[in-house]
Length: 389
Image 1 (tube, rainbow, N blue to C red):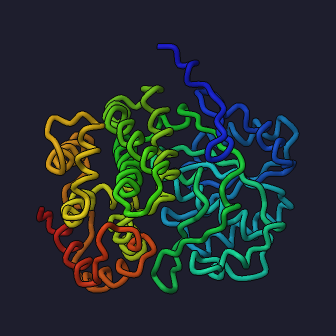
Image 2 (cartoon, rainbow, N blue to C red; image 1 turned 30 degrees about the horizontal axis):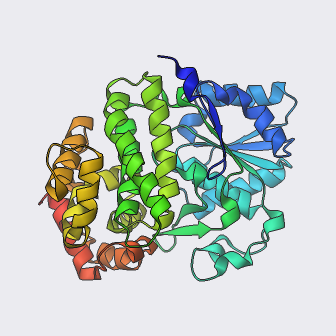
């Protein structure tokens, strides 16, 4: 198969360089944004791999004074961000290369925001008009390089950061947090283990699915979400079963970016529950969404029947309507090795009421098709915990 036909430059929703091997264009991408001394932000696991060494070497061979910061947790914290800001200033850096999964991408974007601010990080939480507080001139440019296909954070205008003191995830938002340049290189995702490929791929599906079910009027996002789900349907099983399948890896990167573009329309109860569960149990965000998916679909059924009819037709499912979609989701989860219940991934019942209260006020809850109460979220959590469909 001729993979060169996938080698493209896109400008929606930002400048995106797509294709195998395009990581070699990283130094030129940095220079395009005016960087002479970028700080590469990643996580400890990725920092130990050769792809980071190669990226730094490429930049340095090109004359860039590239530095490295890898103090990022799986669920990045405010302290992680401010440690990155300190590293940025200590190294007199002038831009950020955010490289890795959603954690590193979110942390990198938040670091680039905070290097020029004189307010604390939480002052920029996505509440009201807090984004107006940002000193835009102080923000650093960002090149985003995803190494997983799930969060789509490379095309997002926000970062999800854990407030350890409050044990809550907060969304930091500003329109200019959208990275100015993205490199989607499927070769960077080939080494991702099958379990992480599955969990991150299901995260991409959750973004598309919740955006598709949102009650807000945004037909462009709805269309993007629908096609993103078709890509997941076709290529996630291939990427999980055959990790070196470059075409499948590329199409999943595209689906991931599409999901994050689509959820400008909103998310829903999957994310409203996944955010507190991630903060309280330090669990993998994509895996949480994957496990929660069928339980949330059933809870929302009364309000999403029409959308499920359209989705089943578009995906050419053997069974029509809601039942067809639910059967497909359950079969896909099983095929790629997603556990059936939250209990199977180490979540317990000690905080059922707390999770319900947190979910009800999570920003994602605002665009769920049904406005669930804290008690309803607790009941939904309990069903997913026990595996009761």
